[in-house]
Length: 263
Image (cartoon, rainbow, N blue to C red; front, side, top):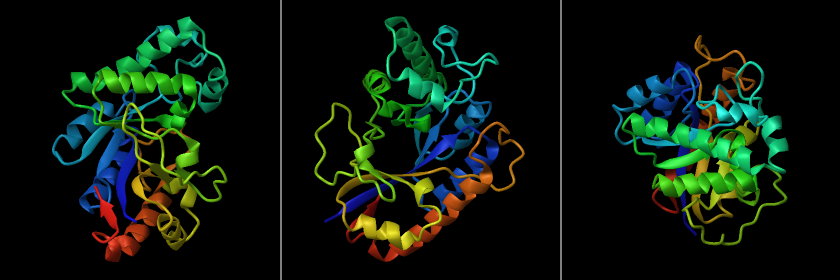
């Protein structure tokens, strides 16, 4: 069996330190892609910093849970708090059960505006991911897939929780996945879920899989004065992900080109 790994760094644009850590993993030959949050204070800086690295794949990390929206109508949907910021993941979980036609239109307009940030910067979006994985909810999944087709995106993060390689995922389905209208990796590895465990445990999981696997990491620098104080997942936790994936790739090195391929 053969597997192909693609390491994608989430939360680009959140801070300068996050982007610096992404570039470090990229120059080490570990990360090959970055997902940029379109509504962050550092978004424009991310666009300009990454422009010098033509081989770094850039994608949109759409968000309905962090930062300020780019459009006004979405403020009436219940996803935006009184301070003008998105309310967080609990709000979107609640809204995922039922969304009115009016709210759907407002949310789609917001997501489309986030995608347009890339077009305005002259960047072709290679992939779409979502902050807090909100497109696992069917109503938002449809919107994301529609945007992917509209913007000719190459692939979308697999939203199926049965495809998530995390410790003790009793829902994990190792059978061949069904064809999708928009290409998706077969599996998703969340490094955040493996921190505190041995990289060898994750290596064992890989031997049971076959196909394309997206590896998600949230890099950061330990000292970062631009990191937002209201973000719960702090640089201290993110640095642990960096350490883990560096050790993991050192373990993979003897097998790369054999049954493991990196793209």
